[in-house]
Amino acid sequence: MRVSEFDYELPTELIAQHPAPERTASRLLHVEPDGSLRDLVFQDLPGLVDERDTVVLNDTRVIKARLFGRKASGGQVEVFVERIIEPRAALALMRAAHPPKAGTEVWIEEVRATVEGREGELYRVRFSDDVQDVLERHGTVPLPPYITHAAERNDAERYQTVYAARPGAVAAPTAGLHFDAAMLERLRARGARIARLTLHVGFGTFQPVRVDDVEAHRMHRERYLIPDETLQAIAARRVLAVGTTSLRALEAAAATGEMSGETDLFIYPGYEFQVVERLLTNFHLPKSTLLMLVCAFAGKENILRAYRHAIEHRYRFFSYGDAMLIER
Image 1: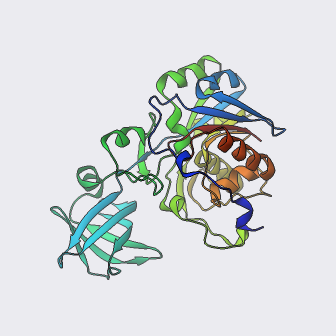
Image 2: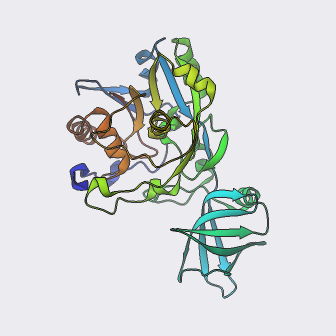
Image 3: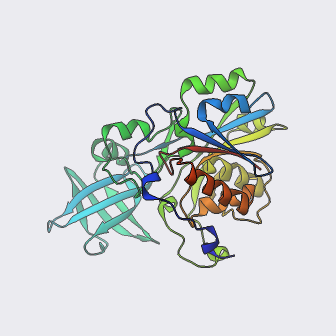
């Protein structure tokens, strides 16, 4: 299976650069089990769920992961914190004119960040202050690279779900950006259960697939936790995963029997789903692992036809774009 099989042409103007005026104001493309398509709006979602459904949300919270500093020589350095591993230590991507070596010191305002070494693509960095506090004071929201403006005040709120609770992600679980508190109450009023899990989205979500053979690709590991009450809520019910991150956590747990840990589960056509029957998601980048996942879920031809339809009908794409409800 070739990565080129998951390509499509997207007009640049369809990449959403800003969120809709209201969280629930996006459009919704419903992909039914036979591949037929319905053009809806997100406010129609409650009419598509009932007492059979458990809606599973990813409550990870995006950290202000992007920091900018300088070396003693004056050279600029970008530090992108991928995960906090100790109160004053983190694994991070670092961008500088020359790759930093062990012992390199970077100053982020009054904070010293010292490179201790490499762990694969990441640097182990020790800070002179609590990392979470440093991010809150000096960090910026790590918007995806296809959003061309620098993070603004509005992004700090809108690139975060209303139910975000557990800090640790470097990208938002964007399907959840469409919900507000009133929408969640409307789903409950329909009889649906609302359940939560946590999967901290890692920097791998921004990384392109660099191989031609799909099976040769390796995912970066991401941390997840599925509470006991969520397991109880999905038992013998129809599971609607909000976002590919919720789906991956649920399917990883089903595959391994582990309700917490790290997963590098790569889902592409041929994968046999064990838990999730319905998926709410945004539109994904060409040749991306997320596009491969939704093709596995609903069939490659069905999904690529849905994407062609969405382009023809001027849907908005990617993180701040419109949504799809896909039936397995």
